[in-house]
Length: 177
Image (cartoon, rainbow, N blue to C red; front, side):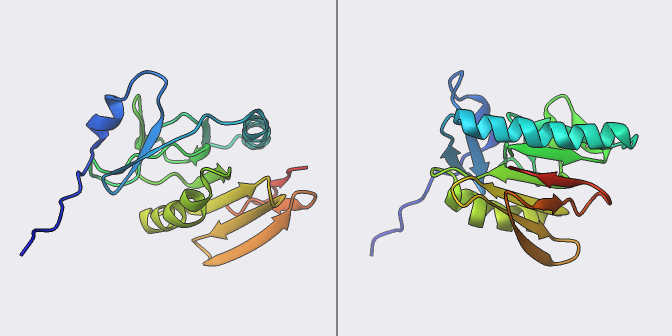
């Protein structure tokens, strides 16, 4: 009888040991390397982050917006480490110099050909299970935004030319196009 091949489980130490410039995420002990973002991806991330920041500032909100690269330690373990494209954190006790410890309130991922499986499946499950309140998948190829409100257990789909309501803020709508 042959023993099953043991897969290596990686930890956050392995992430921190990556060569400079190499980016990866860690999900349940498995490393997922990240391709550098495109210019279009960065434009979207910058635009959305700016809109959220302006809304928070105008309304004297207490939440903070963190664009990638920003470390999110979803669980109290050393086998999960993510870098969402945009993280909105409303509980300052979750923040330290290393990043966010626990679930952000709102996570936005901008899907790319290399990240679709992670964004649409793996991260959707991880974010929901960890207590993220709202999760957006912005998909430039489909020109659509999927909005998951885990608090309300709803999902909506919006075109880039529609105003997308932010569930965690009354009055914040973002038109991607």
